[in-house]
Image 1: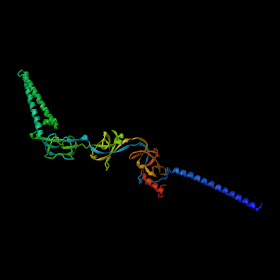
Image 2: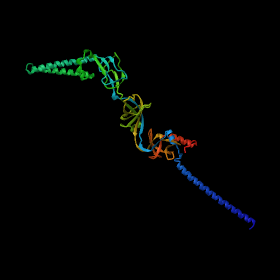
Image 3: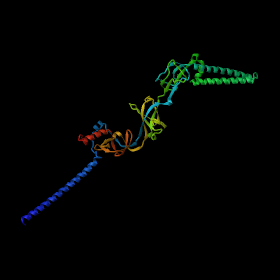
Image 4: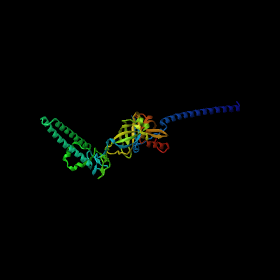
Length: 404
């Protein structure tokens, strides 16, 4: 074989060796790439919704940051409607006190803001009209006594055939008329507030007391209005005092037209006024049948106990009316939710630490939410302090932390 042929064979062998080596290198590269892809997929799955950084905290840090862990559980989700309203006087425990007789004011014992008890004297009038009524009563009593004596005498004479039947009947009629007159005089005094006991004591009192009329409190309450002054002439229909029993008040709630289908009698209501005042609970006792032409709202009312005078008429309030209370599989507090990359997350406790997990939420109220997916009953999650974990997560993402 000549030299040229030998060179040609050598070149061909070298080319084949190079091709074989190149093919082997490419195969190894593809295998390595496939291996990295599998590992990357596993790592991505471990990252849990794309935010798989594990936040590791010591027990001391958990306590310092105020992190509280709870177990996801089923529960009742109370759904409320927030409606405006105000506190008003309980009209069933409100009275406008009038004197019932005309007279001159001689004493004013109670003033605005005073608390009065049933039967307590608030003011005293000097009334000629009352004196006339008492005089009529006393005169009628005497006429009844005389008519009774005359009737007994005539009845005895008639039975003995001494007097005629006509005289007996006239005496009987006179007695009946005297009794009617006495009953009329008694009713006038009853209308002025006199009881049977007080009527029986009138003949025993001195004449000077006949003009004395006492304005008394009809029940326990607070004087919220006063329209009486010493020495003035007060008419029988004048409003001297207004007394309110503030131990209970009305909560008048304005119900918008769109909310009317959800509001009904008996629903529970949480009343709040802010400014540090405690909330109060009650139930709707009345829903008005009409919608106001100007406000386009209907009236719903709650009778609210007020033993400590916490709720003052005229206060504006917010009424949270419970319109639904469904049982849901998982309910958690709103404080557990965190927004990361426009998605809603909760932090779940694992053996390695805390990891964020995307969740889908459903119905909610001001304090709690329903979790539709992403968190199962029995799983432990961060109920309070989740914002601290979110901050740790973001620091780790920027390379400024050691969360994992």
